[in-house]
Amino acid sequence: MTKDSMTAEERLQATIDLKPVDRIVCAPETGNYAGQYAGITNKEFVWEFATKGLAAIEKLAGDYPLWDCSGDINGITSGYVAARAGMGKMKLPGRELPDNAPSQVLETEVMTRADYQLVTDQGYGEYHIHFLERANGISRAEVLAGLAEAGRVRAAELAAIRQRGQTPLYGDLGGLVPFDAFSLTRSIEKYYKDMFQIPDRLEELMPILVDAFVAGAEKTVAATGVNRVFIGGSRSAGQFIAKKYFDRLVWPYFKDLVERLVAGNIVPVLHFDCDWTKNLEYFLELPRGKFILALDGATDIFKAKEILKGHCAIHGDVPAAYLTVASPGELEEYCKKLITVVGRGGGFLYACGCCMPMNARHENVKIFFEAVAKYGYY
Image 1: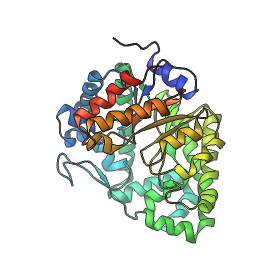
Image 2: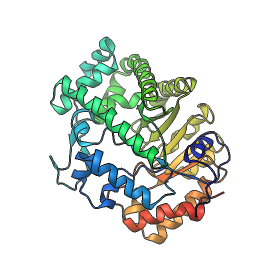
Image 3: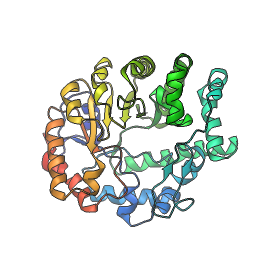
């Protein structure tokens, strides 16, 4: 029998606001693991997401009803969309890869340094469409068809989330740390050379990206009715960027983005992969109780709790290794520590780091979810 006294949305809102809740929010992104749990191939999950994919997630949610907040976001990873308007040049199961392989994003230079002029002349939106055309070897019309389909898939996914009594962690994508955007189109090697060789040029472009991401987030909120948006960050972390470049090219524009979103009553969910431990104190400069910092296992989440306690909600962070190769006892001990230490005092969303690995062991996933009932009630 459930001991819940709040709805999923009430619990999430109170957690973001740093107010008392009945229990921790359980908010993993289960991603492609759901297909494995349901016994279908990843080819089926990706290319038949609207039917088989959603049914697989429904089965997982039905078996673990304390999963109350969905971090799933499959609009850009379903096959039709990924092949036209996904994260870049892709290899997909059942196409370039075996039927049960995970999708891959190829790290390669698609846009050149000369293409920055497209941003200046026509804006970031046009630049991104050119990127998708080149990365996928398709026409503009096909890119636009992919973007439209992404919206339809996301609408169906949000409807399914609400139908099963969950609340969505975010409505849809709302942008990136501005510095990261070009890294994904230029490749990390070429872009870091740009950082060293033409920083003045990048500084000219960053405000254009901020404007584009604010406008995109506003459209996302209007389309989904959810005022929480996904903001991705990884390649701007202190793991990669020296402080002098972080202070010059990363933080000012990212801070401006967050402050403008918050001023528009939009909650940024900062999905930050890689190691941000060196940068944690910077987040104290952002508006208190107005954003979520989602960490992926690389950042020291216990250090994040120590520094940011009482300033923002923290999301995370059972690392992939605990769900794939750790013993059940090791996993349960980590989950207990995570919930009782990072969850102490509220402001905590319990999840796996980034997303649940596709090859997670079913018995470990069971322990992950059951830890909510064992340790998560206040």
